[in-house]
Image 1: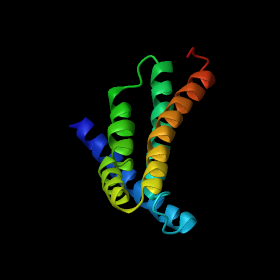
Image 2: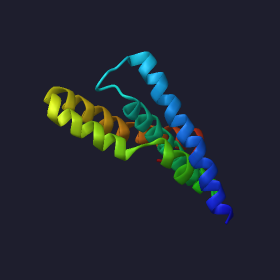
Image 3: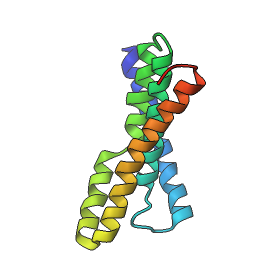
Length: 129
C-alpha cells in the first residue's frame, strides 16, 4: 500500500510540474507549434531519467519506494507520450519541416539528455561509465 501512496504523491507532483512547464513554455516560446511544453517536459524528463539512472547505479540500492516515487510517480506523470502523439499527428497534416524539427527535438534531445544526465551523475559519483 505504501508503494501506491508514493506513486500517487509523485504523480500529483509530476502533473503540477508538467502543467507549469507548459505555462512557462507558452510564456517564453509563445504559441510555437514546434517548441511546445511537451518538448520541454520530455527533454527535462529524459535528463532527469539519466540522472536517476546514474544515481541508482552509483548507489548500492536506492530503495524501491524512492525509485517508484521518482520514476513512476514524478517522471511518469511529468513526461507525456500521449500529448507527443497528438502533436505529431497535427504536424503531419500541417508541415513536414515542422514535423522533422519536432521529431528531432523530441527524439534526439531525449536520448542525448538521458545519456548526458547519466554520464554527469556517474562522473560526480566517481563511478565508471
